[in-house]
Image 1: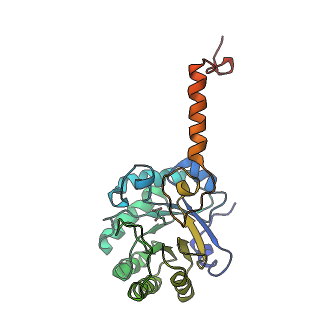
Image 2: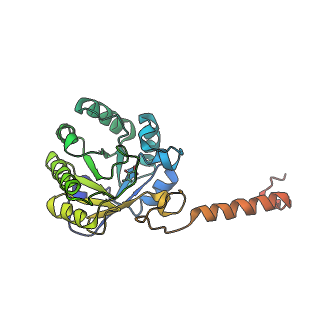
Length: 260
Ligand code: KIV
């Protein structure tokens, strides 16, 4: 089992699609590690696990705990630490926090949201040896509205410029979230590092989804999410069976009891 490195990710541009998913815990990371090129410890953890209404409230220390859990159970996949809101507002703060995150969690890279405005920060971090994944289009740390981006020409132009600017500043991959298909295609054609789409069509070099959304554990529904299972239903069925067993005194049975 060979550890996936940044250079392996870069080589996948225009080749077989990169497989990426999110993880916040050891058991999920252990499963994903067998299949994913990249595991993102996303700040979506705030909304998915902690019931927050925005990712903006996620604390740095919370991300550290989840990233440690994920990294401890990962041998193969590249693990990316999602820098939470307000932890990279200038290049010096970004470096201080990114360095700390990488040191404490042993993650392989960090992700930050933003376009042209954070290009300076990206350049600074990459020059200092911190691999950075960018994130453009819909950026949950900037907006509470989950709406499609790139529908008008001004917005389209800006997102494309943002993507090009991040590429020039040294990102090794770029997440494109919730944009019209033709824009995703244009960005993928214009930059030479892999694009990773979430709600951004097949015209990306890889795909990412929030694992809890695609296994049907979270309550998030969007057109771009394909549900591969309905874990909520499975859990509910198990809980109901447990309740019945306890009420009927079928649990614990002799198999679950310690006898001397
Ligand atoms: O926080 C997250 O999970 C993300 C993905 C949706 C790309 O940023």
